[in-house]
Length: 355
Image (cartoon, rainbow, N blue to C red; front, side, top):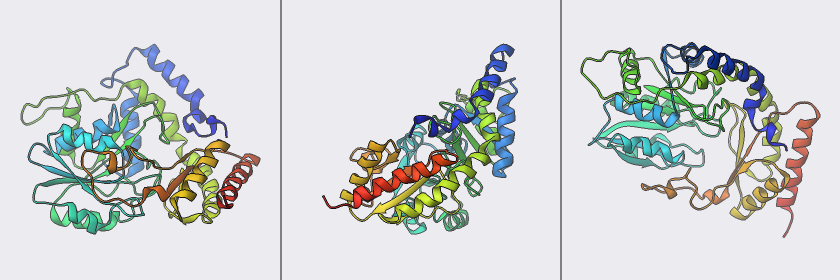
């Protein structure tokens, strides 16, 4: 499949170019005093049902600044899931806090019991990720248990654009507009929350000089530039149409992959991936190699993969990642959808064949 079908941002390339030209012509390139940064913040807040949103230079920056605004620092501990991206832990350590890793199961996310095992009296926050376009399996229970204990929950929604309710559970949540996300601007992030004081702290720490704080604080510079926000606006406006197209192809793809093993639930997701736990690591590796040969994007974890805590400075027990594989769903229409499914069937048939 051609690369174009996986680069969802190309669907709104003309509109992005037009807005980028307007930003350049206006001369207002910074986040302060611009038009598109506040427009994006308002749109994301409304879409997620949160009161406030702050646009950032990256999702990693959004997490770090949020942790700092919550008072996380030296002497604190933050629980992160064993499957995610390595920069989540980096954002924690940048505050001076220590990382504790919660184990995950085949849902890709921790259960409440796995989170509870990682808690301590020093726990200042817990990060839970909605991964591969699906909602975290145990988010409701985790939210309730942490709220009862007064521990802030931060939702990692970097891969969860369009996932219903993603970003609505925790004290705060952050999204990503990095190059490989459903809304892609190269780099960028957005944090959402309901608490006015927390929002003001996040804005101040990110470098918004217009926000006053009760006490002086060191202000960094993690603001999103105006041109990045302009690139995100057309994609956000077209997000529902993108999700509809992805979900329509995801369903038959999930049915085909059921021949290889246990397919992760797709209900409540955004349609961008189908995950499967193959019966053996060999079958997963064979399927992945065949998919690559056919030009179908997939992810099969290997040793040293930075999504998995096995490659991080802090580790915990993990599932047999060699059995896992997921396939990215391209955006296609008409006959091209069936062509994709035919190629997927070819790959599955090849993987099922005796060596």
